[in-house]
Length: 216
Image (cartoon, rainbow, N blue to C red):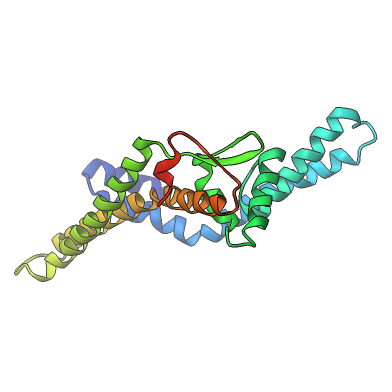
């Protein structure tokens, strides 16, 4: 309750650096518990599906559907990707065809750009997505430099108070945090380009009309 009051007071006073600290510190110290809770929820779904499949009342198409759901959940826990049977098997085949060079993590990151059609995987990156990639990449690196310069300012200003110095330092840290977020948004396109290139090597890629942007 005290933390909530401090948070409300910090927002009211416009002390956003304190707000970030109040929110971030508990998340950092409880990160492991959050991860464990998430993993337990995933395992609980598998247990429920397994129990349902062992029931004599579950037969026919219902049983077939639950079996597919169980395989899907197990594949998700192993690779981090939730895919239906057809595209899942295409992804596994692509992984095998590249002799493991194309890691499942790239499929996971590139998922927004991956399509499945005519029994083949395809990669499509639109002009807007490619433009966003370059904007995030360029301005992300610019913000990193700006953030570092701002964080350096307190040491260059004479007579600055500790509170003012922490405020300026916090602003620089905020710039860097925003920059890292922007740069992280480029990862799906990077992985999509890698997936496209590797699939083309194995002649397993369906090239879409606008997919040229995904090739180096």
